[in-house]
Amino acid sequence: MLLTDVRDTFYQSDPFLSTSTSPLLLFSDHPNLTISHWLVKAMVEKCHGKDALTDFSQPHLNSGSTMGSREGIFQYVSAMLQEFDYMKVRDNCRSESTADDQTVHNYLYYTGRLPDGAVLLPHRTGAVHVMAYEADVIFRKRIDQVYARGGFDEKVRAEEWVNANGYIDNQTGSWRNWLGPEHGLTDANGSILNVDGTLSPQVHQADRFGPFFSRYLERLNDEVRSNA
Image (tube, rainbow, N blue to C red; front, top):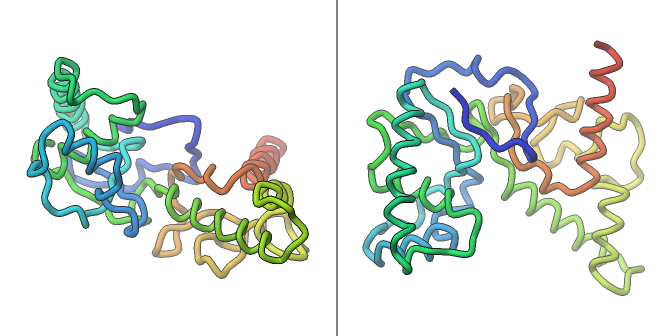
């Protein structure tokens, strides 16, 4: 079974072909993003105290995609609901954030409260490639690069330029070449890859690349439909 977000997810191959005997598979974002992020650290400490988690160098897990066996997923959902029931009757656990499922997801894993045999898959190695951190870093660096060249009175104008023109200067050749090989994330078709060079079956949060990537994806979808 696969529990997943929808708006910011797309598929390049069948994620269920990534077989595993583990009852629960969890997916991490880029190694530079750890549970020291406020969404985990600050919110867990507010609810459970400063000793609830101790090692904040651990990878930040994304709750937007979780896989497992039928029994493993049922146990996962039960554990999540139990924690939400705990939180909802305690004022110190309440938050205005709509992303506190990610807080709970990380807290339960790192305190050993998920099903026995739950496995954390390293970034870009499993059925789900979580791109939020790396996509945002590349996007922001591109904006800075364009802004530093001059010609824009505000950085927001440079961002608009990137959204319209993309990541490669003097773009030539196929529209598939939307990112460039220097990042090591795509193949010649523009498809997003796992570390081993295979297609990332499910790609999550690649929308952090901005509207330019969205237009690439639209063209790709149009091509698939025309060949159907």
